[in-house]
Image (cartoon, rainbow, N blue to C red):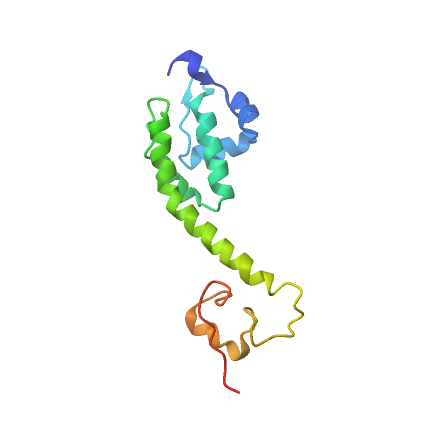
Length: 154
């Protein structure tokens, strides 16, 4: 690693807004791989600022550290990733993000009719599940998640 590209953990913390302890945790998770200088201090690449910023953003979008590690594992460790490198991994996340956006849009649209309704229209309510008839569809609010509502007769 060239010395001019090296930064300390404190500088990395300042630049990313992460606590030093969080950076150490991400190191244990294999998301960054600093080298050590002769005194045993961690030395990070400047490109680790972008790498950890990506981790923070991906976590905010709901991606697990395992998934983030898998994607970041395709970036080069021995050099600063190029725009092409970042484009390739962003395309990998794109389909998953599009699915999340579609699901959130459906949820928002269904909740529009739910919030403040006072449950005066239980026959149309996406949360109403008399006799737990949605149990065979799986866990969670199945009707809000897109499953077709099964309404009991009567």
